[in-house]
Length: 469
Image (cartoon, rainbow, N blue to C red; front, side):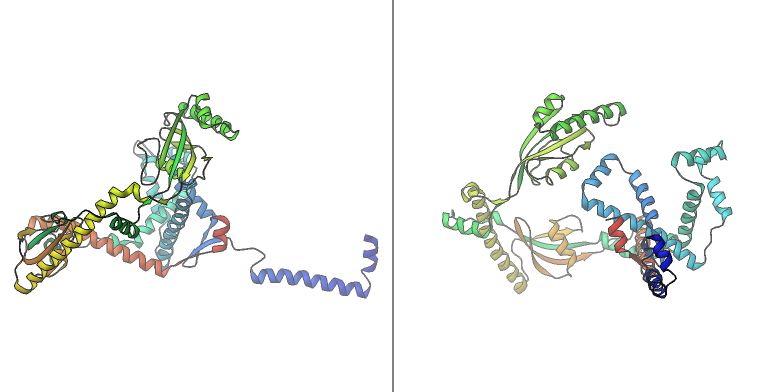
């Protein structure tokens, strides 16, 4: 066959066919080069045109995970929402570093090797007897898995960060008028006239069954979904390596037995673990059980009925939780909540009568300037009257009249006067740093927003979905 092809290669038809094939392969290669198919772009994101690679992402992700406890890592891997937030946070952190480097480059800032060398020498972990030690430097790098280049790059980025953020790190001198304005806003007091109309002062008749049923139709009681659960725990001092390893082996054997079809109660008995059951567990009604940590509870409400969780590591030991039964959310039967409905109906009727009375007092106040049963009060922004009244008092102008609602009363309020505080220079001086810090935070936020606009982050969705999501 091969000999036939070699002999036929010199014929005109064969040369034409070979030409077509060669052109096809060349065209295919050119198309890949033109359309970016030959070597696909593996850039995860770009910040102001600068690339963020998958490797950069993986390095930062590893560093962030290394700073987490085992419990935090387990919770992260078991919660898709938290994992998504974590992944986005890693990209934002890399983008922030890249943005600073890009801005520093645009401004022409340079960090010399001489400065980096001096910074390395000044790090205490690289010193012995107060002097830089090459041996100590090598040991620290070896133990941390870093290279000299990693340390130098980190210090260079920090130095550039200091240069770029000069506008937001320079302390602002707070003008006196700004400090006085803040001082007055905090310490000004107001005089008010306030009449209280409590719901409980109004009497109502006993409601009929028909009235209660009509009220319940408009205000039904919903019983939240609840679950009957059980769990086994292998207790251990998790900060002691020997106990941790022993407990882990026991828990893994239990897990194997459960997968094999054994019940949790039997498995607990076989391995001398603790077995616990709870009924009616809901997000609104959690048992008083210290073993039901946040990660355990999260599993309780994620598992399907009659299924068990994987091993959950807590501070007290290893836990396997099972959802035995799920009682779906439902509307409570009228007779089972009749007493609660009667109390709610009574309060609603009292509230209606109280509101009518409060409006009568407000009308009289607006027409005659008199407020029956009023008390004169001097209030600040934080005390002197119920909080809803304080909010209304400092939100409106002097002379304003209004009705303020609360959980068990209506308040008819007249804002009579305002008392500015006496200026205390010592207190003003104490307030200056706080006002300056607030101004710095606003300036810092504006500056970072400017950098984000100048160097926007663009995610490569194809690569993100393939390698990250």
